[in-house]
Image 1 (cartoon, rainbow, N blue to C red):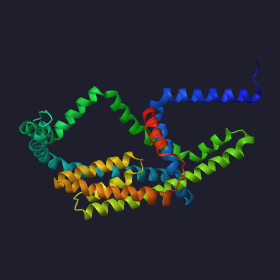
Image 2: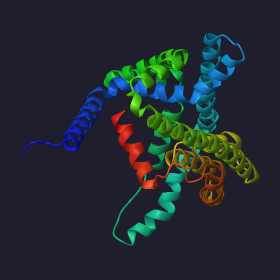
Image 3: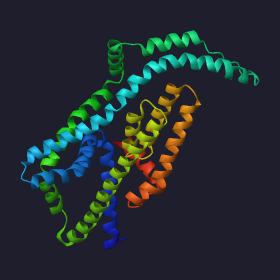
Image 4: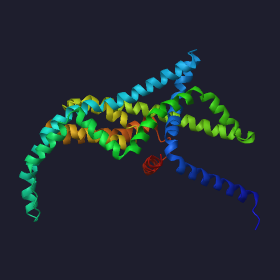
Length: 319
């Protein structure tokens, strides 16, 4: 049975899509730094073009923009350092007290149901002290031991960490030529339609990114101020980290919430810390969902939250 032109074209596109999917699956470990660098290049290239338009040499513009991006990322990661350094001593002190509280309150309640639970507070205290009092040499030894077990994963992470800035540099340096070459691959009769579609995508993504940055700034200010009013010692690092981490849907907010709950539970050693975090983060989540995101970002991407979660998990697994 002969195929008509439409059916033949459909089979060709299906074969190309299947081949692209197979290639993506096979080359996922290799493509990871290139995909991440390409996304970062798309986000950062307007800043490079703006500096280049002011007659700044392109190589200097690329280096300056990339160094600023790396510094911003490191600053975000360093926000966790005071949280960890402050919480470790409190955690060492509170773990044995928590075990005693469980023995005094939870154990009699569970005994009514025939469940016998008894925590050895002395052993738990000794374990917590040994673990949390470990010096730098002990942590390095543990890290090296883990590296020997999962050496390939560690090497891949280090390799990608060094490769991505290099790939990003060359992409930013050659961005106009790269876009022009990709544009030349489009058949002339399709260029107007494809260019219109790409311009629309670029406008939507640009508006989304600008709106999301505004949301992040407002939330960072809100969480820092609200936690400070609640009496949290680590209000600034926890609040700023939470506000900036919400750029990663769902996962960023969850991580910030976990850090805030840990800080509240250890600092106050009572239900006040948990309740304060619940109130602050509950108001913040409602405000973001009902006011900030609809007003500053809008329903531009047209994706259901389930689709966003699936995309994060699926492509996070592939790449």
